[in-house]
Image (tube, rainbow, N blue to C red; front, side, top):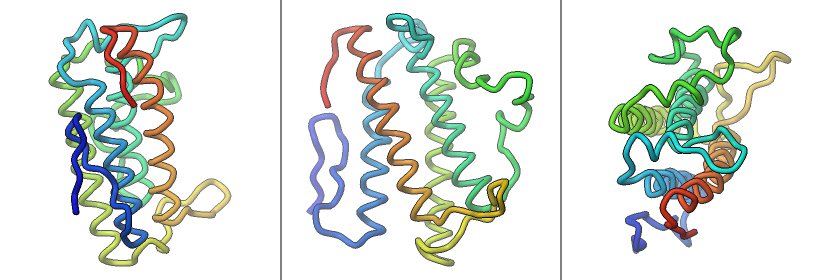
Length: 179
């Protein structure tokens, strides 16, 4: 049985196999970010709270980058995708965070949604060819590589942490609260 909450998020399955549970929780976290960023204009997506320079627009662009890095570059060993392939990351290691202020809300949402769609396809491909135990093609500097299982758990953690930031930013903007 599929349950959808008041914000349109599909609840993770309560009794499923490991793969469906991991993917269910990752999609739930993705949907939470979409909810927190929904209906906001450029000024709202660029607004900061307190002393932090973090913005909801920056979160969308950062998580688009993270999706691409883990599911394209690390998992499948592919080259960095646009627009991230044109960035001098050594000169500007936080480019995605501050450059988001120059993008429209539509550009930011599309960038993130497209990255999520590509990630879903790449995860499905990896599951079909090797399952959760397969190792990423992009090895770490010490030569080790994480499993797809580890990458999925890491992405759940990444979204959960940043959704906490999104909660604070959205509440500061317009008082909207919730999980």
